[in-house]
Length: 271
Image (cartoon, rainbow, N blue to C red):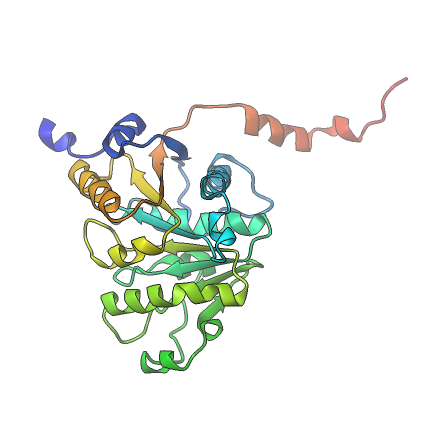
């Protein structure tokens, strides 16, 4: 029983030791179940602001190197297994980049359990009106789906009749074309590293790789395999994000919320 309980990552410090990385961002555990994008302009609380912090860290680490080379920076979101929070990170990070005025493309490459489009569109995506064969003649602009978030579009070949591996390879081959539609940033959701091979073909495209771990969920063995595989394939910047950590209570957000409703702001100062 003890061995079984020790088979999963339990703490942020344990995740940092396994990956050999300092976690600059932790996505807090919340009692609410969020199925859509939480990064919206009117929302500022620990969960949404954690994704904004991740955006800032990613931007700082990437440092504009891709644009200096005439490329669009590509941010790869990976995890050891399903259920680690990878798609939530990808969708909300994409929305966070839009808040800074960047035209962002969210790309799905997990065709075994696709969830990115549904998360961003807040609805099941419509089936494509074209076939795999049509991709030879369609421009990258024709393959993008607009969203309710101004500045954010989705590139997702979900629903086409082809194997998950083939769809991931086709998608990877067309990511460089996103520069032609004025994309500022590309955020790619991937299939789990320890379970599939498709993600390995995307690694060479990445400027920054965000490794997502969920405490009390991610298996230690899978985490070791994931970081060993990634390090063997790339010299890209690696960032560790820990999901589900219990946050320390703070009065900051509660205090700000009370200030908005307090009547004293509308009163004139007494002489």
